[in-house]
Image 1 (tube, each protein chain N blue to C red):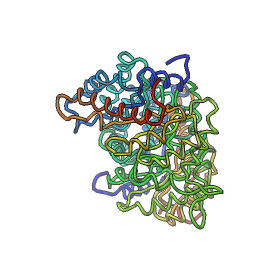
Image 2: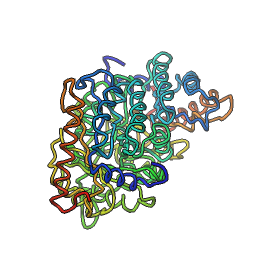
Image 3: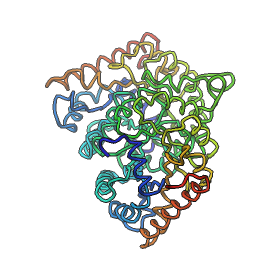
Image 4: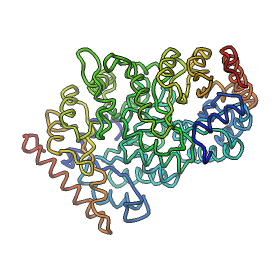
Length: 278
Length: 278
């Protein structure tokens, strides 16, 4: 991933795998058919790496397992580097703090754990996001309109003149803050209308689209509204829908099938829109 | 801390130590006079525990040191339990994710690391905060008006009819969500006016007040506006101003002096307001 910008790396792996699929690696001992997190993740990665553009481990699930969980997270990033060197690895961490502290978080995610990208929260404003953006070759996915029901509590509040929902204001801020060309956004698949509005504000910024699969967003609408004019720059994440496609010993094969099916469904939408892979 | 509510535990340690001071344990290798984080923290804790009501390690500074940093964080919480069993230990983590994921974060902070309280971000709305609130004996400090310059970017935006800044709207949400009596707020000392407004909305909710010391907030104004009617329920945090009071081998003694001076300055304000310790 060195030398190239994050957007270039993302585009390259999407093109070569003909895929906008991201697999969320969210290990949950209550649902995993094996007890070892690293073993579980390795099997998922082995089974899916040619079908996807990105992996997205969510820190919460590793922290919930304490130090051994975080060691498994380190091992997972290392394994992706070895087994799927062109995949983009996104730290789903939703960090954000005052400048001095965000600098330490950015160091943790990029220098220590070695991620290519991270999700960050915008609630503390520009100086809380800036230390992440200064890693110019990393992708910084700012939360904009999230996939959960409570998203409406703050993100839909009308602000400004003429009034528009806060999440649209955040999308405009993201554009203004994008001095290094590495700002990206997070908009849930569960709200395809909102996704379309954000895409119109930010026509050329990558958007991470969680909420297909277990959260049951409308996939076709999310793809149509989430991609850019060429049918690219959307990273469509499924976590539970892929990694827990089977709770049995065939979990890796089932994950491959689920990832393949998601990739094909997305590509069929792109095809219908005249934006298929060349 | 068992059997009692978080607010009762907080009040008890404040009364017995006659102190509203919280020490932020934010180890920075570039500024620490010793290289071992746990050794550094232990010395700070030994030197300050009778002067303070709380310790607040910020996860960023431990994550930035990788697994050994997180091991030092575990050791720090354990050490506080042993050496300062009545102190409240706040995880400054600013977490927040969709419900399923917030549950994992809450498990990490409370069950795995064993904190008494945590800071959380409100950007994802009620279902992202609810899994933390369900730990009824833990204190949940929601970010409201933070101490950094960028706080204005989102938190000051006028919302609602009649319009009021977003942070005031968040304070009202906090009150509504407080079904377990464990909601608390974070409002920076650097904005004493805003702190006063939040206190009027939430007269009986604990408020964590960072931003004295290195961030140079007006201490007297912050104390006057941050405490409740009895002069309690404000947790006044200083990190760098205490732990880096000296960069030399006398750092623990200097930290004690700085903590004592902060406690005394706060108590002098309480005294002038007729709200001193009985």
